[in-house]
Image 1 (cartoon, rainbow over the protein chains, first blue to last red):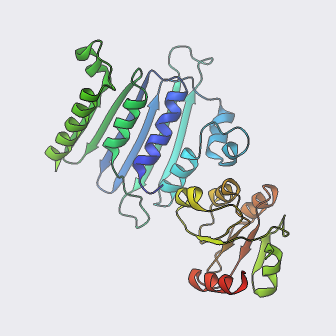
Image 2: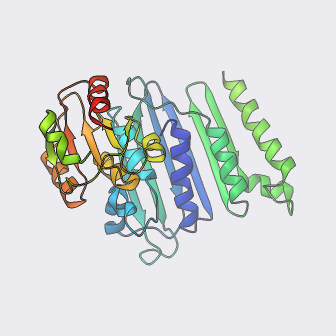
Length: 183
Length: 108
């Protein structure tokens, strides 16, 4: 994808589809290393399914369940010299602590590194599309951290839907302010 | 023009499960997600990307063939994947632009 933020959106959508009540999008930048993690508490995948989501043909046949998100994310990190790992625990295996953890490592100084792009927009799009599930977004940089937790917003807002216009505006502005404070 | 007819013009077949496919137009690109949304059915797609995702994108976009330019190598197991997924893969030793120019002369 042209920007990693689009890739993040695609993979996080898989978490929502897996019935996650909380999807965490964690970006950690240290020097020339960027680690992207998408962690959910959804229904999880068996080992066979984990293997198959990395295979683009799993999705291109009649059952297009997860899109090309994971194969393209794998390509994006590997072409910088990084790697992708997926671990998952199914609901059957552990009724309490189940879910999926996608972790992609990028070397940002590699010439083929895909720019991160507008991650705030991706987070906003996720909240707008899925106002009833929770998202934790945390972007750790060398200079500080940008963070948004919809569970905290929900506590303050009580019955106001997260995807109402004013709330979306506030979230967008808040993320922008946090990023400006960093730079 | 049929995909198999390119073989008479210096193109090498790596995987040719369906040489009878008609080529209608050409698309060029290496950013796979971009190509996925823009290449048209029956296009010949010129690229230098030799990833397993290249084969998947060709299959999704239903291009008539992938043309690997610059003589890039594709691993044997990927060529095998292309055959089983019925994706035509040709190769040209020419750079991308020259490959396109050659196709422009050959296609009606």
